[in-house]
Amino acid sequence: MKRDLHSHLILRLLTLYRKTMGGNGVLYPILGFASCVAFIYMSFGDLKLSSLPKGLSLSFVERNGSRFILDGKPLYVNGWNSYWLMAHSMDENSRRRVSAMLQAGAKMGLTVCRTWALNDGGYDALQISPGQFDERVFQTVLTRKNTITGIEYRNDPTIFAWELTNEPRCMSDPSGDTLQEWIEEMTGFIKSIDKNHLLTIGLEGFYGPKSPKKSALNPGEWASTLGSDFVRNSNITNVDFTFVHIYPDHWFHDLGF
Image (spheres, rainbow, N blue to C red):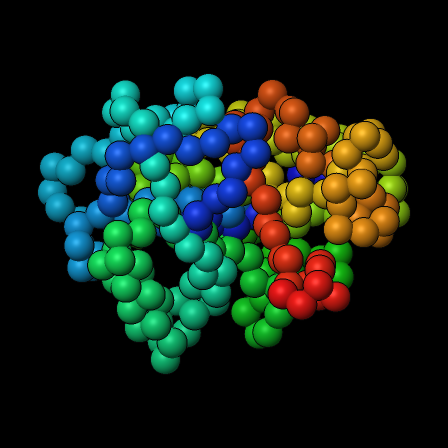
């Protein structure tokens, strides 16, 4: 299958399924971005992105069973979703909004922010048109060297994790086999390049035909026809943890959320 990395920079609180969080509330500076949603974790109070303390040694977040581990201790994650950081950082007029958001998060004690490493519209789009992508970005994001720190993203411990894609669906194959094959191939491809970071998918939590006993838990019959299956997709060797993108106000709008 074609090797397009469609992903994001993850800086956000994750709702985990079978692989949950553990903790110690350490904050690290957010100095990277990713084409897979990358979770970045932060420290240093006011969080000035233009500087990094000399001699600073950071460890990569790991998973042990159902817990996140940092330096041998459980790591509890508090975070938020600001998917627009990349697009705004590219524009000199809106760049200050990015710094303000990260500083506000750090002051509130938040430790992880999720953001996209993609932009699918406008003059600076990474997705040029339906089915057409700027391959240079997707193929090099893991190995790109940060021009400020001199560190390749795959070796940057300020990145918490990579998210493969944002809410994947394949409605042309409701069985889920096509999406399953793509996830298996791409998670293996990413891990062959970057063995340092945790990897997740970015699912909406729907159950497909391969999980018939759970289909009644979907927000509607339509959810089982989208080609994704939370249990099946998550049960892949190279997937380190799972979480769900939930929209109760949209899925259950008749209930008055």
